[in-house]
Length: 480
DNA sequence: ATAGGGTTAG
Image 1 (tube, helix red, strand yellow):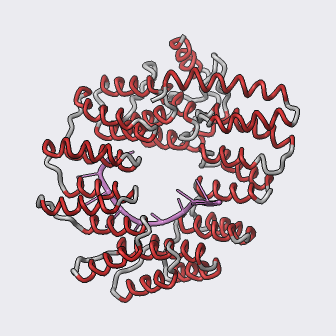
Image 2 (cartoon, chains in turn yellow, purple; image 1 turned 180 degrees about the vertical axis):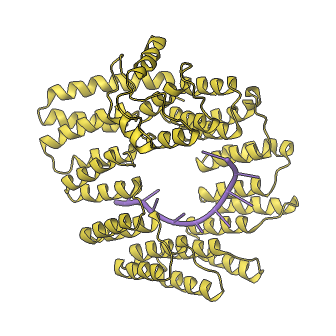
Image 3 (spheres, rainbow, N blue to C red; image 1 turned 90 degrees about the horizontal axis):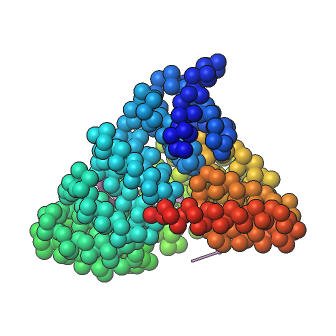
């Protein structure tokens, strides 16, 4: 059946020469998105005559990132043996990442084997991707096992891959697990500063600064020199753990010992003080760095702007924003997001919308964080039409809605308690499943209740069918 | 994809 399916894809291409071949990734991605998915004789809207390159393919895969099933369908279409194009290893890595995000375990492994048979990998990067997916799916043991077994797939462990697996575990908050692996294997890889920095950062991420200090001490005892990254990590850890006094002492110690503190150090301190509500100290440090000849970066400005939005006033944040522009800094998407959030939070929707227009005019594309944040604020304030308007804009643009977008918008459909909103929520739920996202049980139940309470029995039955299909068959069989 | 700084909610 699978063969029949793919064959019809390729034969259909011959007759599709009437339209000129789409030339850029946006056009191709939109063509793929606008074509129907489900039928067996589905005609893939692409021509084999398109001059495929790895860059073009990767760019399309990234555009289709939040529509995993279509992304993989596109990848398989080009990978079919009747097509002449051979995927690059980076395209394989992207496809593997997408399949793993869809919990399609079987697909992940068949892609890895396919990669190997084409002698394109799998590489260290491939294993880093899969391990990261395992770890964030709550399967750290599988991530470790994958690392220990990767040589069986033609990819030998080295210090870099060891550091990567430790980092993957730490970033998914499995620090105990990382530390265990580190102690077991540090002799085998003759670990370095990076290894220790990863572990120090791990303990800091879960606010266990005493453990981080212990590891720092141990690294010195073993003759491995901490560097500025180590100290910046530790400094950030104190702020994160709410140990403001220790952070300040550590910062002073860094200056006293003449370790060449840099823009990252200062940004950490500006942000740390600000979050702690110490706005004046944050400002003082910002001024101090300029005096000391360390130029603030865009990130430093972002930190200060965010802090002013949260702990001071949006208007003062706007002043800093205009100042940075005047000095010739180019605000990035984070700058705009932080400030738009500040304005929305203050109820200044009009000014927030103006700023979004300005960012577009300046050539800074809004990303899904921009949209998600705005959609959230609109929903909270019952501006459902505005929220839906932004959602539509995402769907037709370069930035497809992600899992968060659907969750935010579906929640938003409950604030007005209207029957027609329940129907929209149901449609959104159907769409998110079609795009490969797996809604939480909570979301299913909430939508089902909403539909039942508003007399939409028929629709709720459809949702129920969908839930049993997406919950049991797909996910249980393929879950990572 | 070998480490550190800005976006996330009460």
